Image (cartoon, rainbow, N blue to C red; front, side, top):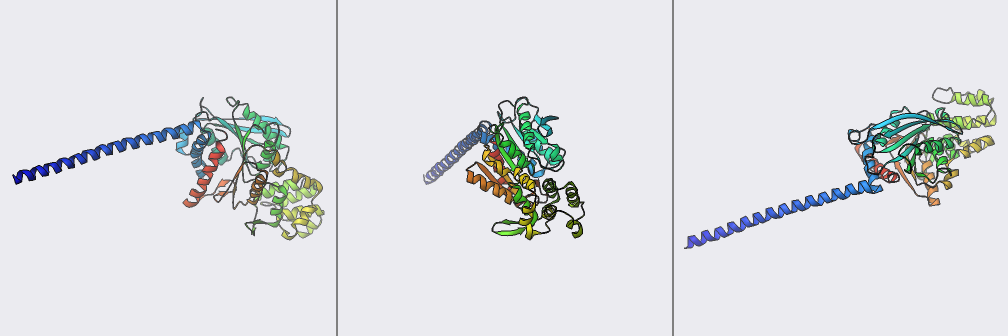
Length: 412
């Protein structure tokens, strides 16, 4: 009897154990099913947000584009999942001459991101940048996400010079993009780099298109031409409560030289521009002594030879030069711009100091104008630096992703 009771007790324990195991398996299966349902629901909601909400489409587009920006090449995922791109060239007239346009457009009839077709006009800096690999890569990558992209350049920019009249060229390019097939009623933003920033600002303030501009994004630009010239002359900037040495690179010196010598006698203008780096030979004291007061002032500002005399040299420039400096400053039209503005600048930019974008942001804040400002440490002016550490890429890449998400939500 005792043996039977022991066996019966053992059998009950065994049955109870098997029951717990079966119950555990059932609870495990239920948990897995519920987790799977939850994951499917989250994926559904995420897909719904990415396809229906502008913020979601903006984030999805940014996530696809970020590898292209960081690597300066089109990533395989974007090439495989994005749209095919057509490229064609065209021209439009403007009040300051012919505007040369490169159009990159998705070839699909419907955008990869549902209802996300929009447009971006890119205004690069000085020079003819249409064949620069980084610009081509950026334009194609944007088009693969469903945007119609137009790059523009003018003869003045090709000659490493600036003219406020090229603001009309940007307006005409914007209108040409708006006339492209499938773009009727679509939102168009403007992206400007370096010397393209003032021209884009003038166009964004132009009453012919200012209510149509979805956003204005400016990378490595300046706010006031005179304050930029002051940094050139001092070879220094005041930042974060201290004075730092700042040495401008050759291209912005060339552009500034073309600007501030326009009002000088032609012979002086040509000799100054011929003395500028990288190929020019500096003028001797005897040669410089033959120049007018304004000519000597312009030369010393460009070469940074007299940092202690910057204010006197700026004051010595001809009235026409002062008028031009004001005319080419985005600050003069800021109150007329209605689109949200996105400012991007590298902290150690050697072409245009980040203090210019900081001043831009401060003015926008005073006006209560919608804006974002992000400062980076991974760019060489407007191009990604090589040999970056993982921590730098992760930190600045995250900031770039979030900014791009907010930016692209305006055209999604």
